[in-house]
Figure 1 (cartoon, rainbow, N blue to C red):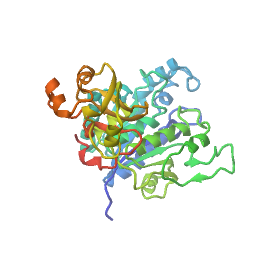
Figure 2: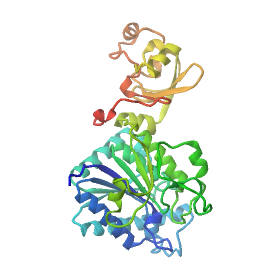
Figure 3: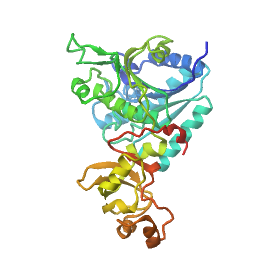
Length: 383
């Protein structure tokens, strides 16, 4: 039977990797490796986002259970990360598959050069039929495991590498109308076209005692994944063909996203989700209409005011005269230059500062805040 090759990101939470006392279960690690190997041998490209470093390390440090302090968690992660990757390496080796370890922190995504390097490394590993195993660098991360039990990390990685599908495995078989452990009448959503504010209100608390992210964390990750053009599944899996059943639409959980989910290319992903904002540009009604409805670039003539001390190539917010954010974009001019040419026609602006480009922000480096980009950015994903 012909199998359509897909690029799949699989996120496994701590609750799906641990024993009842919260320590790492080698049996569960081996079961997940076996299921992923089954997909890999069918020709699919698999990327694993795995929690579990703290669970793997706290016993060796003498903790009776998962530590609750930040220092304790980071110490356990420092010990456990090596044990976790060793467990995965041995488990995948039994199926003839090579693995690679990547430890990421949030600043990898906010710094453009690091972001591009992460993409290049992952692309090369996938090209070589290696399964990348990614975790947050918990031993040095601040803000208490920043990504939220790796849920958000899995969404961001899915967008970065233009995955076809994201699978988030957890200890609850999908998204419910209420907490199923507190409400016996709670009903599961088998399919959701989008993530709504009402869903966050329904996602109350987390049953797991070994992870850091509850269902609200997964909903936030789902929202981000959809914004990056990746549909996903949240739920459970069992058996060697469990992941294949999920891909076939027969998984025990909730499918999220539909055919209207669209892609943002890599540069626009960085601008929209990761870039630090260095200033603001306020535009008139004509410029607002041009970028919001006509798909145009931002020109000097439409600028009425700007704030910040930004330089060429940095990211700024675009706002209308009422102060409503319309978009974000990467500027071709500095704040000082824009002060000289704001309101000018492009040809006059070019003479004023000897500019080589007429656009203040080109359409290809502009991401709208309230209107989704509809073009197929997958074409430009390598740019």
